Image (cartoon, rainbow, N blue to C red; front, side, top):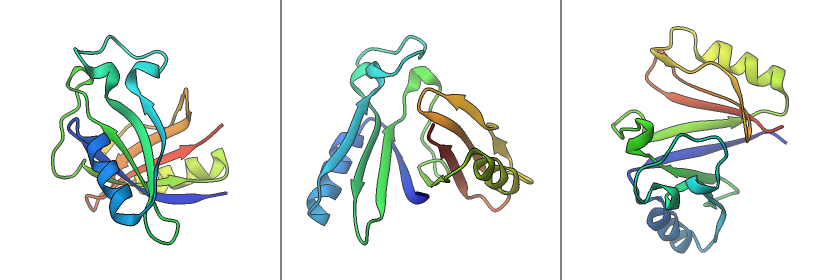
Length: 138
């Protein structure tokens, strides 16, 4: 089933932030994954294996916040414009390609859609300055 969520990037404080949001909204943290568990990553910096690769917390009306830590060793740098992303999870790969194609028209930053260990994924900063992430789970 398709889903839209909000994806948040943090400079090493993801675990603390989602615990706070879970407390505020009376929910629980789920699907916590750490960078050290991910296959195929380049060598990580000291302590980065324990940083959060992905986590989710439901807030209101079924809306989900997803989050990750940004790692210096992977070239991540948090700045206004990349700290919040609208995450789309379409039902089909074809719909993922269609959405990505349209949203990336005139994009100033675009990854292209690529197979990843967690699905078929891409991100872009659209011509209006909004960051989108598209992921079709395999």
